[in-house]
Image (cartoon, rainbow, N blue to C red; front, top):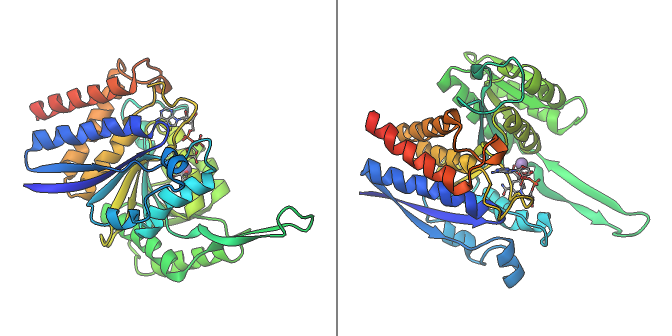
Length: 359
Ligand code: NAD
Ligand code: IPM
Ligand code: MN
């Protein structure tokens, strides 16, 4: 039987709570499908680990992760450890180290999901954001000169390589072509007079190879406005690391909230493991209270199943998420309910079993 080796990094805050429910779903699916199984290996890395050992992951951590088929991550970051340390030494280290240069973040209003926009039809919010995930504004290049002195200077340099820009844009064109969707590039060349002028140029250059793909280009400020006013303008969206980070929280807000938004960090060449995680963070404000919404981390399980080529199972997971929201009687407080994280996870498992029986 095919066995998938999954590295589980629960991380901090609500990370472990929501991940436990996603693992339940994977186990249930393996049980029902009967054709494959999952072997989970847990890694205790995160802020608590840092406070004990002075590092976010073991020294040979990346080496050990290399052999897995996928990484399933909860969230990283907690008060007590500076965010730029915890994130750079764990989450960003994995994204960059494993060249997961495509961050796929669906912004899709599922059936039953709450939406704060008025007069909106569900089909009008249905996009996939392809976020550059390896460089750009997140290159980490810079300096801090004359620290604490009056002449203090801080530099944070965006790095947009031709290779890095071209490959993510090409990925988005391919996706748009394959799915017959439009492609929108989000940039900001009016103000960022090197990086984003270059981005737009590459978008146009690569586009010449895809005359069949209808394209649009927006500045990130205008795009943010259209996300709220006319989200139906967007189908496949490609954008830089930082812009992608920001607009996908906005996307989450219009499509069910942070508790529902999922993301996949993909190494398209499959040379290294890809990583699946909710878009949200460790939510220290509600951590430990048992009320975090596990649906985002369950949606990322659906993305993992798609990635493994089990799209039929990925689809059933999404259907189960939709059903739990349509039924409305087992939801966490962020979705207006009073259920616990675990109750929602159990409900999705039970709906899954029913869905499979009726198919
Ligand atoms: P956050 O996403 O953790 O929280 C923002 C708000 O959304 C909070 O009010 C929180 O309660 C709510 N929320 C988030 N997920 C939820 C869920 N599943 N169910 C219900 N409510 C939910 O963002 P933040 O507060 O900016 O960051 C907190 C910490 O997480 C920081 O250390 C930050 O660096 C880190 N972070 C990590 C990741 C990641 O690991 N991928 C992503 C974002 C932030
Ligand atoms: C995300 C997060 C991360 C990012 C942070 C925690 C570094 O906000 O995954 O959206 O900016 O990529
Ligand atoms: Mn983010």
